[in-house]
Amino acid sequence: MTLIKSISGFRGTVGGPTGDSLNPLDIVKFVSAYAVQRRSACRIPGNTIVVGRDARISGEMVSQVVCGTLLGLGYDVLNIGLASTPTTELAVTMSKACGGLILTASHNPRQWNALKMLNEDGEFLNADEAAEVVRLAEESNFEYADVDHMGKYTEDTSYTQRHIDMVKALELVDTDAIAKAHFSVAIDTVNSVGGIILPELLRQLGVEHVKGLY
Image (cartoon, rainbow, N blue to C red; front, top):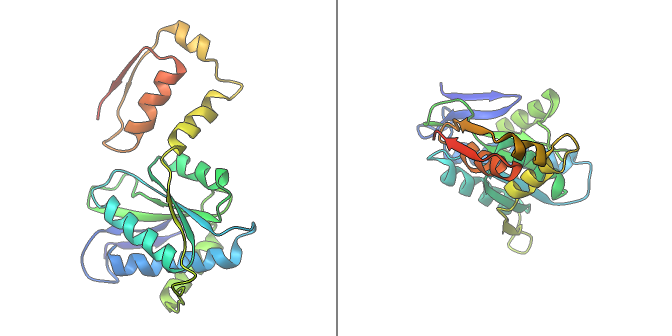
């Protein structure tokens, strides 16, 4: 079996039979369960879920299924596109969203992907909340919005720069001192979204020479 359900979300290989892999039908089920949990547990007013993803081959397909499911449940979707995990977490709080879904299987090989679930604080669901999502997914008793109450879809890829701006604004970060040090930095971003944010962050911090090992 290549489908893993845990506190960190739902992880599996893409394709294969339902119930045994991360395929479109199971993605709809898991996202629906997460959305129902958020509807009852979110402590702030609002109706938005943030979606961010890594650079996996399956990412675009998974993202489209996730976003469509949320819209069908009446949630507004803020799709921030290719974004690091911390960037997606920050986007949740910046946008005052009810939660977020990070589409990434972290260290797993290319055939894997995952749905990682955030609350309104941009933090991962706790054990009880994750267990509730699993229970709701197993029951699969969902009611979707009619045509007059479907959600609104928005794309905004500015959150990587907003994340960089937050780092630069930290009291401990001295960009002048970094620039004067004339650093040369090599980074291995393992073919994913680190290759978007890290080189730009280093350049804006004043690092002169950045070598990316993609």
